[in-house]
Every structure is written in C-alpha cells, then in structure tokens.
Amino acid sequence: MKRKILAILLAVMLMSAGCAERPSSSASSESASSAASSAAEVSEPESSAQEVSSAASSSDAAASGGETSSAGSGASSAPESTAVSASVSGALPESPRAADSFFDDAIFIGDSVSLKLNLFTTKTRQTEPNLLGKAQFLTAGSMGSGNALQPVSDESIHPLYNGTKMSLADAVAAAGAKKVYIMLGMNDLAVYGVDGAAANMETLLKGILEKSPDAKIFVETATPLVKAKNIAGNKLNNDNMRLYNEKLSEMCQRNGWYLVDICSAVQDSEGNLNVSYCSDPDDMGIHFTDEGCRVWIDYLYTHTPQ
Image 1 (spheres, rainbow, N blue to C red):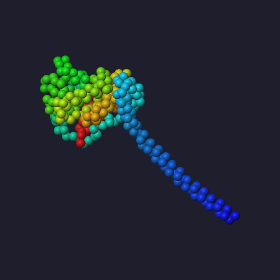
Image 2 (cartoon, rainbow, N blue to C red):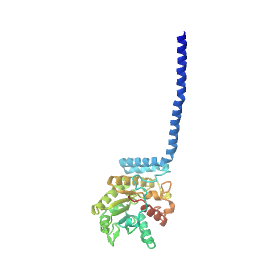
Image 3 (cartoon, rainbow, N blue to C red):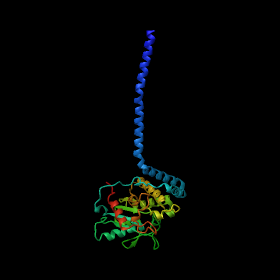
Image 4 (cartoon, helix red, strand yellow):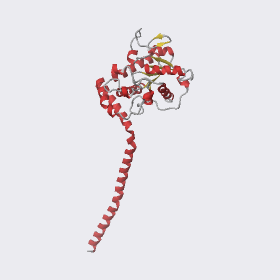
C-alpha cells in the first residue's frame, strides 16, 4: 500500500514539473512570433525592392515572349506601379564627388534629350568653364542606336564631329575619348521594341570598342516621360522604358560596362519624369529644363567608379 501511495505521489510530482516547463516553451513561441512580426514590419516598406524583382521577371518574360508580350505585360502591370525602384540593379552606387578633370577625356552620345544637356553645358561653361571638364558631345535629334548603325550618308542622322559627318565609332576614335557616356533608346522602343532596342545598343557599343578598345563604356539609363504622356497603349511608355533599362543592366553586367542610372535621379515617386524637370510637359513630355540638366550633371559627378 505504501508503495502505491509513493508511486502516485511520484507521478503527481512529475506531472507538476512538466506543467512548469510548458510556459517556457510557449514563451519561446511567442518570442519567435513577435520577432517574425517585427521582421515583417521592417521589410514592409521595402516593397519597392520586390517590385524591382517583378520588373526583372517581366523583362525575362518579354525576352522569351517577344515584343508583343512585353508591351502587353507593361500595359497590364501599369496600375500597380505606384512605387518604383530607386535604382536599376547593377548601377554605379553613389560616390564622392568627382573632380571636373574626370570628364576631360569623356564624350557624351545621345539624342535630343542629350542635345539639351549639350546646349546647357555649353551655355553654363561661360560662367563655369570647368563644368564636366573638357567633355565633348555627339548628339543629334531623333538619333537612336538603330539608325546610328545605318551607313553614313547625306540623309543619315549621324552627328557632325569637327564639321564632318561620320559614324559614332569613327567620331569617338577621332575624339580620342577614353570614357564613352551614351543615352539612346527614346527613338528605338516604338520601332524595335524592348529587345530589339537593347540588341542594337549592344551592337553599337561593340562597334565603338572595335575602334577605341581602351575606352570605358558608361551606359546611361533612358529617362522617362511625364505622367500625362505615359500612355500604356503606346510602345513608348514608362513600363517599356523600365524593361529596356533592365535589359541595359543585363547588357552592362554581361560585358563589364558601367551603368549610370540617370532615370532614378529625375523620376517622381511613380516612375514618371518629374514635371519640374521637363521643358515640354504639354508636348512630347521628355525634354529637360535647365534645372533637370543640373540634377543630371550632379548625378554624373557623384556616381563614378571608385
């Protein structure tokens, strides 16, 4: 009988000990739950980073599905693009401000958007002679990587260098440039689509390097349109522009070229061109004011290789 009583007492003691340990296990669970909740709260504001991945995936889908697919994808996703990536993947990070002399051996290639930068720099050098160092420009309205690859002729779009019209590859070589900054694409998307425009850019740059093998390539992301001109039904819209810039990012990583994300410096919170930087918001909605050019130039100075 005594043994039975002892056994019962021992069982009761063991049960009590087990119950005493359970709150500790529960507390750990609550702690883990609390940590997970906190982590979720911290990462929630980074939804824009997820949207970057989404844009990259859309870009991959466009590559496999062709231009029609990419345009369709851009139109369907447009309403969700309320938050935009601050920077395209692989772009040069912010750096200490470069000296003016960094741009002494640079040449800037571009269409009418860069032509405005050319005009602004030329005008501003009257009071700030060292702006962008001794950088030169090869700019022409309506130029794209596609028509820049066409033969030089009296009718071709190629800009003049020292009074002579020549291919971009020949002009860069004649200028002796060691840094090639290029922004093209605005006049290519509607004609060649996202994939075709990016392919033409790569072909153009490889042709330049054949004649200037020591040159470093700096690809500037294409800048967006103002909101009023961002029409999803058009091939030239900001969704396709983002897909194109992602393609440029892939191209730069593949070839070891630098990507300079000018787009991130001039876009608003929805990914449109900041209207205060646009000189023609009621017309084409793509060209820059002096203020916009100043922002562009400041970005160039503070995003250089280290």
